[in-house]
Image: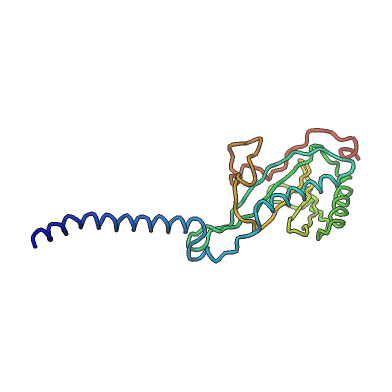
Length: 222
């Protein structure tokens, strides 16, 4: 009988250790599920648009829009910026994001050509099934820092890409974005050739228009 008691006593620490390992494993698994969108709230979320599909749609919208400009004008190729949607109330991360990309024209566009440029893109967008907004003129409006000279026109593609042409000082930009995209990083969007160490969700002026640097014989003059 005494031998049996001693055996039980020797086995007790091992049993406790096994239980602790199971508890630690359960906690770690729960933390991973919580962090990766499988918690009690986030697991009911819709996954969102496939990130690779969104990437390709944004690229196509920018290429088509810039390609519609006649005469052609070179552009600065800005990279993707991914803004993840805010966390749930309990801290669980959302599985979706908004993806942006901006291209800036290398040539300055004279104010007299703003409407010409807007009309060219509106014609292209309409021909390709976009829902096109009105040409908007913000000249003289106060932005709390200085009066703006901005004009803009926007459209939404059939697959949900929002494209906006903004014409102002210092230059002209085309920005394309898509909401509700499944969150992803460089494994989908790749690395910015100009900033290979920067993550796509690190904002550092990717959506700021680049100043024009090359005169164009048509677009830069009245």
